[in-house]
Image (cartoon, rainbow, N blue to C red; front, side, top):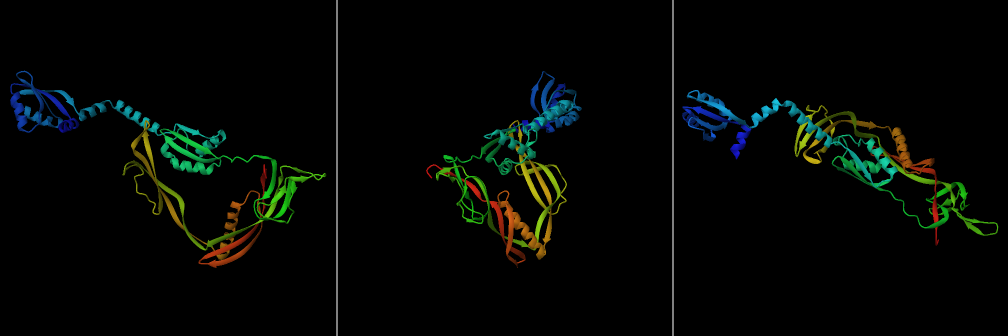
Length: 396
């Protein structure tokens, strides 16, 4: 079996030798250690046998010594197949182009299916996917991993609680779980306005109901600000849905520490990318053969599986990106560090404040310099709407 495979790869020929000294010719080849197989006699002066292609030249030298001739009946093996393929190069090129097209089409996204989302939410998801480069007609290995897509969608769209992203063949399947508002308790059309935090009342705007506090009053969290209970002239009372806004002065404290000297790394924008075909632990470079010229870099490696007609291939597409990093030292004077500390503290404060809030006062409680850092403790006075609705539930 081993010899048959070896002969097939090396190539072999079937020879017919005929003449008066044909037997002497065959015996001489055997003495010269030329391997012969499938030998059979054809009449009195002819013998048919098979030899390896690389022994044909030796056979030609030997046959000249004897009164006989040889003709080739059949040629087989890889060398002859390769010659036929080269002769029919158009067919060979077309075949490889066909396989290449199938391979490329098998790694293109042809569909994005979204289930579990309302039409409005689905539209937002598709818009976000387009911004991320996840579109039909684009190659899969140029897109983010499914986990990365899932994380970006969850953080950028407020209407969804969870989204599962799975790539099956050439289609992305997204399973969406939307946020659901909790069921509100059964109630009448009556409600009070209460304070959501401690504050000093500065402005009161009542649309419906009766103000239960006055300007400059100190209120605690949960205290009624606008009551739904309205008294009539006949000393009877009516409950209405209280509406309005109450603006109060709320206090916040912010602590920040700003180092005078900071060393950090930034990307210069220069980067180099190398492309590979990876099979297990072996990576074959296909583009970007030169050694990277970037000295200080951060290396980002992506490994994308490749498919052919829905089957996952044993090799993958790997990219290695080298991003140039530079070390930057930032130094502040004490005055600059204090100004920067105020900026950082106020920016952090604004992130946690409700909309339309206004900082109306600030006071530095502490300003010190320790271990190369400026430490600030700042007290803020903020004017914000502290009113929230609280339904009057049946049975209250």
